[in-house]
Image (tube, rainbow, N blue to C red; front, side):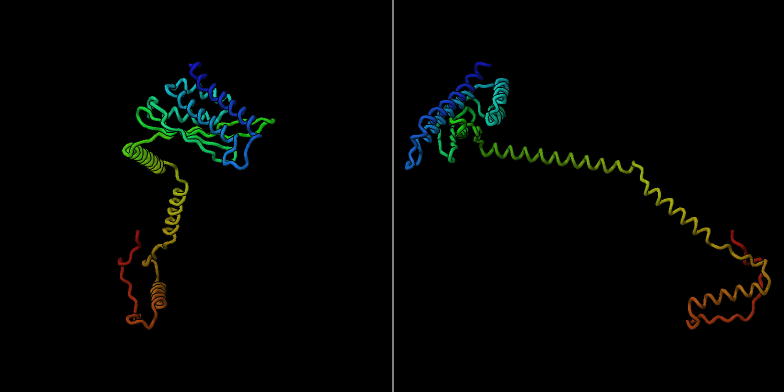
Length: 269
């Protein structure tokens, strides 16, 4: 396992070192008139070989070996390698074994950055591997950094539709589960104590008690004298007329006489 990992990581580091040496020797001979300087040509040439070595070295690497390689890349601080080989671990089963490298296209993408796109054929499908590097001067020397390592398998239309359908089903299932969870939480609210509702119920009971206590007991007519009874009836008629108006039709009540009828008006229990 360690030997295979060394076969991957050592060519990468050695090639990057050789690129830095070449650029250090030829950087002073750069031509201002040419589209690509000698340094650019050396970088592109080294990048093409670097990409070929990396793609070839990946073939047949299992998960344990990939994990160990990722750990070593982390120790070296190579973030692009860590991200790239993590992606490779998740996509290698969709590719299968490497059949051939069809083509490698290289280009200068910036003042000091370069990129190579490798078209490779695998057992199950083709894949494009992108390798990006950049150069910088450190302590009077040219140093090359690996900036990108990505994999783009070519899936068929049916496979893409299947993946989209699977993602849709997973998303809908997740939403459905969340809605059920929310419904259960809301249903549990009825079992929680509600001080406000209790206070409102007590307030209604107090109001009802106060209203019932404010109702006056009927007057016991049997205990009233003739004059008192006449005064009560006259007051009731006067209050009725004051409330409804004396001029309203049918309200012209005139009391001619008052006669007591025993045992008719009784106090209600």
